[in-house]
Length: 240
Image 1 (cartoon, helix red, strand yellow):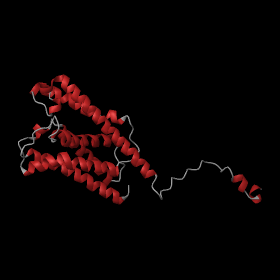
Image 2 (tube, rainbow, N blue to C red; image 1 turned 90 degrees about the vertical axis):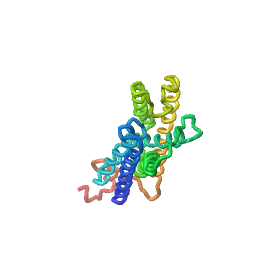
Image 3 (cartoon, helix red, strand yellow; image 1 turned 45 degrees about the horizontal axis):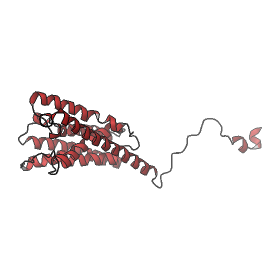
Image 4 (cartoon, one colour; image 1 turned 30 degrees about the horizontal axis):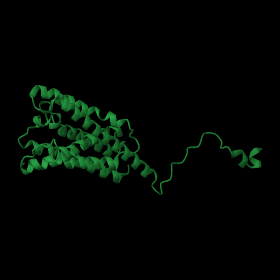
């Protein structure tokens, strides 16, 4: 990565970290407390992408290789899920799982937008611009479901203890476990498709980079020993 690209990458990742911190702090200024926010997938995914961005920004600053693409794809997928589910499911009046949107104070409203809109967009931009292309595999889309499924188990066990669920589509008290199973299967399939989309975009960008005009392929490294036509090009004097 060139010095200029490294500087842009560091600036973008710093913006992600600041946006995560601002989103959590401003949201905690409302009725919710920090500990009350922790059980939400929104907060967990934002913390994950913030920590990852801080680490990746440090590596870019030190001119070190980028973190593993599989890990970056995972955290980018999770924060994308946060944005997509919020805008299409929770804040969408047409959704069967829409949650009432309270009248928030300005700071809390800004925090909400940082967590659900700004951070996902910045993380996707970082992934699209600076991730190493062509390293994602189709099987990763299934592997990336491990954290959402683990979160589902955590939310259900916690719900048994405190009788509250963070999201209406996993509310076993309202839907029953059969309803939650159907809901979870639908969302897992949707998240798997979203993971496949990430892999497909990665492959498309990889082909685009490889096809850029003016970029010659790397020269082949010659095998040790004399070339096959060395004997043909030897002068008579050299044979003596």
